[in-house]
Amino acid sequence: MITLNHYLILSALMFAIGVFGILKRKNLLMLFFSTEIVLSAASIGFAAVGYYLNDLQGQIFAFFIIAIAASEVALGIGLLILWYKKYHSLDLDKLQTMKG
Image (cartoon, rainbow, N blue to C red; front, top):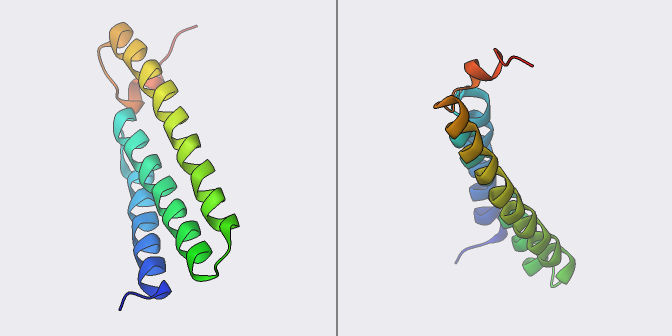
């Protein structure tokens, strides 16, 4: 039987992997992927707690997190495409050498 603890452990592991990816990656696309993992972990946690408490607030909160993640992907991928067309790289080190 899968309990709430199993879902919360999965959520915590995913969150830790996402934060590790955010801290260690130098590629902007990988940073977006890591952010998506963090948002998915939070969504799983809220949905699981909402389900086990028979309360829709956690599941509604998870729905809004998914909507925010989708908008972040839409906007972020567009910006990454423009950045790559201009600089031919998605490396964060090149972001620090921007000239205005």
